[in-house]
Amino acid sequence: MPPAARTCNRGGSKSSGRLSELTTRDEYLRWNDAIITTVIGGCITDEPVFLAVDAERLAQIAVTCDLCDGPRACDRFVTAVRERCVVDGRINVRSIEGVDESGRPLGVGFLAFLVLAAGERGAAGDDRFYLSLSKLLWPQRTQPAQNRQDLKMPSGERCEEPLWRVWNSWLLTQGFAPTARRGQGPREKFRMYPISQATLSRSEKIYLIEHVFGPAIEARQLSDFLDQEAFDFWLRQRVKRAPHLWQGITDRVLGRDRVGGHRFPAAFREEFLAECFEIYTLAVTGSDASAIATGIDTRSVRPTLGAGLVREAALDGTVDYRLRPSRPRRGRDCAGGRVVINDRSWELLASEDPQWFQPIGEPLPSLAPASFVVENYPGVASLDLPDRQFWVLAPDPTAPTDQLLVSDRKPDPDERVMVVVRLAGQRTDAVIASMQRLKELGFLDWQGNAETMPGWREYRRCRILISPWPSEAPAGVDPELYLRLSPEASDTIRFESGLRVPEERGAFMEGCLPDLSIVTEADPLILRIAPLDKHAPQETRELQGRRGQPFRLPPELRPGLYVLQGLSGEPGDEREICQRRLVVRAWQDLAIQRPSTGLWTSVAGAPRALRLCGPRCEADPACIEGEVAQ
Image 1 (cartoon, one colour):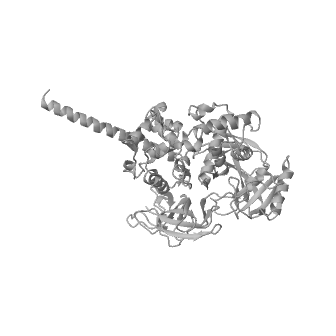
Image 2: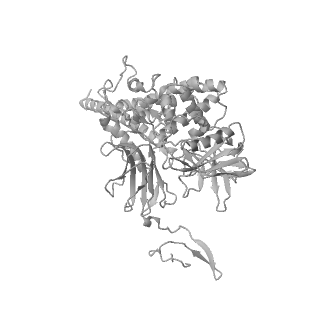
Image 3: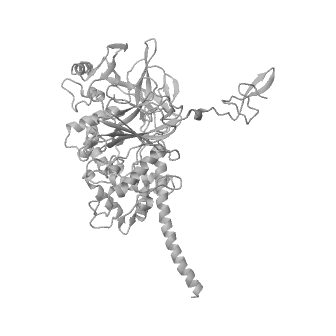
């Protein structure tokens, strides 16, 4: 072989090696970008974002983003992570720290792999997380690793925790609410991050269908249709009556963590119960449990939308109730759907609350259960107003006043709510007696009651007097009413008052900032205000307070992007309990822009173009403020 040919051959061998390394690198980056795009694709501003990745979702991502065939998605993804993040038999994530050229975090693919392992936990539940991680990385090993040391995985502070922080920070800058949290106990400190994103493991899904939902449906303890709130109540009662139920499921239903020693965040509990509800709806259709767990079953939108109530009080004292349809999970687009009520068609429109549509229809003549036809909404055939003995109405946090009451959330401590009780049915006397009993025990108070609609009584301006309530309802109190009224610390930061920026969630005008309240059971509290705008650095501020006391933002906060962190504990020993994004806009940002086309009018019989502007455009002589231009 000629020397030149030999040189070319050696060079080709090195080039092939570099090409192979580049290919595996690009493979990971493609998965990383596809996962980010898919996870945030169905979310809207201020909505909690979960990095919920399992075998089924990986298959969907692979097909949607043209990465590979669905059945091979899990193996291809794990291989890409292994090639990028395992060096000499040890986990090493230094090459995926930081962000890419477009500012997106590089470590999301590895974090999604951890979440995948958390969802593959075996029958023993959370304690098998590292074993599951080892089996995914090295399936051929005869002795899988049992812990972090066996995995040759660096400590969480030097491995996955910085990646989680970059991911959470990036979500905040994009306007979403991050949900990944570290645990509090020594054993759960770092693995709670992925577990908090994988709400139900494969084995738990099978267990729920085969041992909880399936038998209950056969015994007619569960009807073929329940709305989300009725299902949540049934599952909570089932957990309390069955201490042998899987402990991990019990903890998440009740919102506590016996291992980590802390409560699960409200967003996580809501996502967990919503996923349980989704599994229940599949069980109703007779789907096979193993098919659901392995992702073979094709999930579809539930054919029926639920509905809540909206109460509107006019200045003349009249009260009207309207429907508020619930939206499918993860911000599904309404796709121009419409609801037919009394032969009139009403459009389904999104609201600021990602869980609900805007109220629709004319005032309801009664609150009797009813079903309405849904048109042009893929997979949905009807909207149902469920059969309720009572409704609990709390102020809408997105409304400018407290006159608009909605039935989509539990009350906060010291918050005014309203209870609407039906004056017919088997439980009427029990519910009315329970309201009186709760008042006698000092749990709540109200300012009178009246019948504003035939067959219904309103208990007006009910106020929760103590918090938290005991886990069990007192004797003589209806359990469902007690559960719906009991205040539940949601570990959230809530905006109160302030001047909002039109059509921009979480944004307020400079000098007109809102007061804040941290809804939690923790005490004392620290509010940390940290700037996220790197181009205009500002110092981090901290405000100290106690539960139930509002925090007043410094009025001198300059326009920019901030993250608000709620911390509990004494200074120096605090832990993060919630966070939220705040946008401060300058008044000059609201300058009215000149439209691209003018409005035509007529002056002295001749057509003229009328351009409506804000400040006069000095550079454009054709734009005359307040005048008619040729």
